[in-house]
Length: 318
Image 1 (cartoon, rainbow, N blue to C red):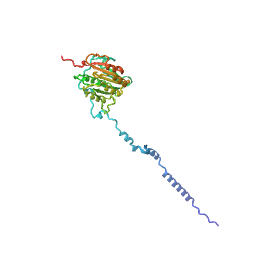
Image 2: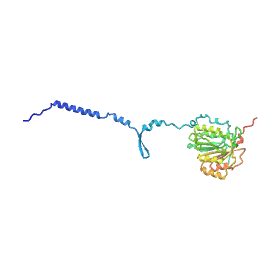
Image 3: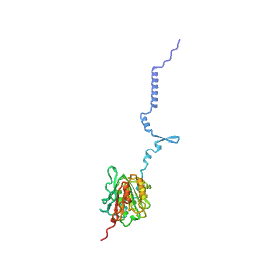
Image 4: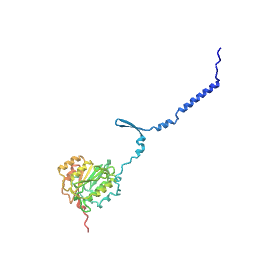
């Protein structure tokens, strides 16, 4: 005869099932991540940079590479005035040894190429033409472009009284620089048997933008130049051509030695499209209508202007 099976009460079975379900639910909630965790993990993901050093590769996080802090730590280039650690004069003309009167009408005569008549008005005030180019001039001989080099004779024959040829040339040069905008570039070369260049940064073989700081520093440089020594026209012109400007203003009293046909041919070949204007200083009316300066301008698409320096002499006292 079989023994009857022990039966659990139904209420106990129900309680055990509910308890088991509650345990399973608790484990599920414990293991599941909170709803905001995904967003937090996404926010914590950074940029990893891959680097290669020869055959080896390594990875670097953005924070290790410097991130935003390293970028903001980069400083802007220092200005020319800061590099020189000196103040800039408010008016460049203050750097000149003395003030010079404006050349009156008739002070210039037409040369063999182009004309210098009307030069008493000085460089145009706007300094700019269509297309962003500058239009500026020296003693009425105007050039147009973006890059300009001024090559001025500073030999002993350019000296003299307070209103010397070199002194008046300096005033014209500063006026020409003032008419340039900061998008234009320039260089200044004073020469005798050697060359002196405007060099505020330690790199003389370059052009400088015509910012107010650079123009003020150029005025200081111009004011420091005195007339002295002999003359080497060719070396100064070759130095200017190597800078590849649009326009060269070449000013001299045409003192010896003159440029012969071979030297003029060499300059024309090197210039290859650079416009060269020649301004000639002479005493009294022009007598040589086809000298080397006239030829230099003609061969290089420029103009020649003659300046009678006897008009610079102060009027006699009454």
